[in-house]
Length: 111
Image 1: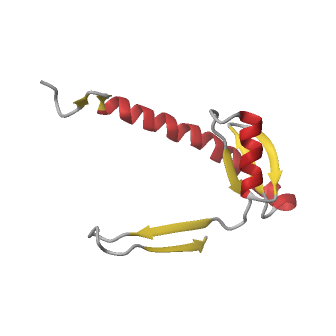
Image 2: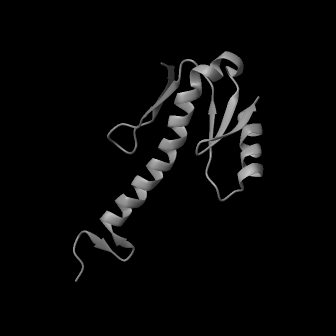
């Protein structure tokens, strides 16, 4: 008999471990972005940057162009970050209430 911490897919701990690895992978890219953001704002404000780990691919005029370039450079199986270079980061808020039938309220604000 399995305990509540086990399933046919492994333990909760292994799921947490996978989630932590995924978080760390994104963290590396976001730290690289943050370390260079001030510099990039000088010449690339509003453009989209592509970062793969600590490698800068380049800057692009649209998200779609940046994404296509990332896939072409790194392949579909490799993760990379596409992020718009902005002085004030947008924050997205979505609230769906406590009931499933309640409508969602969403908004976008700049910090």
